Length: 188
Image (tube, rainbow, N blue to C red):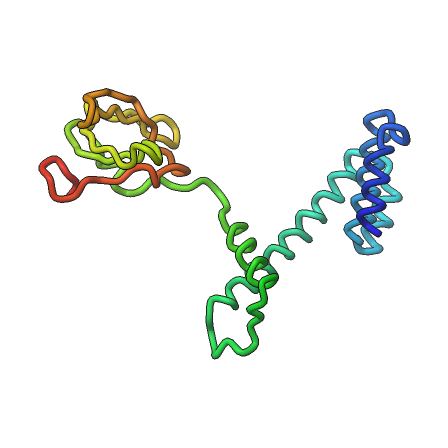
């Protein structure tokens, strides 16, 4: 029923709400209806005359509701990780998929650089995962790295073809880099 209401709403939004303030009113009201917001909040929604303020009120409540739903999923995910004998844990495919989705939701914020990245300097040996075809490529840092915001720009001269590339190390793709152990110029 909610999906049908939403589809009808989206298909006729511009017809029923041609102006910005009309749209803010309509979106807030339908969001409140679909989310089954508490009665006291619905009363506030009806008595608020500022459409933008009404929409903010609804979005704040939805954010809180979604955070609670996410917390429930995370709790379920953690319960699947063990604790006890496991007899009260659902291991059906749907429960396992929900747990996997909940774990993905745990990734909040910006990934940090690995500790060793701050030790990179000219002459240090590194490996970079270039592609599935090329794989891991060994190289030497050719210039002192430059730190810009949350990334480090590293100039690497690769052993296989002698090419020189300026490549970023960022928290979100740090898996493409690794230090070389056991050679001179390697990390301690």
